[in-house]
Length: 249
Ligand SMILES: [Zn+2]
Image (cartoon, rainbow, N blue to C red):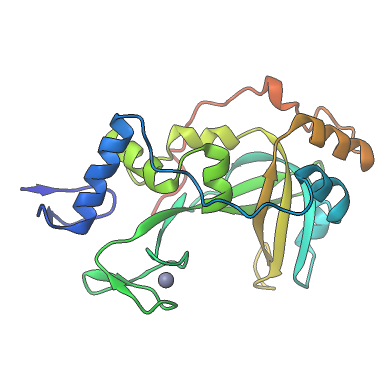
């Protein structure tokens, strides 16, 4: 017997002892019985509140300034998620021990940090969000901790769900549209990556805030009053999930 799914292009021989198969079965059972595996690790409680972090502790920079940064910076910004950046997958094959991406070696995978070789991997989020403010836009990356906390499902569980529904590698699961056309405050870590590329910096989301009251205070503090551009999240129109043109390989 053989199956083909989005992970394996070739035929995978079903063997009851295979770790990946066992794990997959457990996940299906967990999803079917409505007891998904716990989302995200327990985060250390910050010494100050989310509100304080976004409003007082971290400097604000508009997206146009973030794009021009040349040294490593942590800042907060406001923006609307317009879409997912085209041509990028929503998850990656992570090491089972650390969050590093695994390299394919022979029939398996290898982590260059742990030096561990494995026959399987852990899917984790790498969501490339196209974020805009009134003047500029940039690509922000959301990884597993932030992504699973907002979506309330881990990438691993979402991928399993997606496969069970018959979703393929090109399509994005509809759950991800929860990001689209919403205004967020982002706490980001900005790093210069490639001076010659269209976006020279990599922008990693460390925290995501969608609390209306905090967003409202933020807009007030920085005199951002373009409500037309930053819609209130309460009356968001969710666009139909049509991802057919993106993520082509
Ligand atoms: Zn590793």
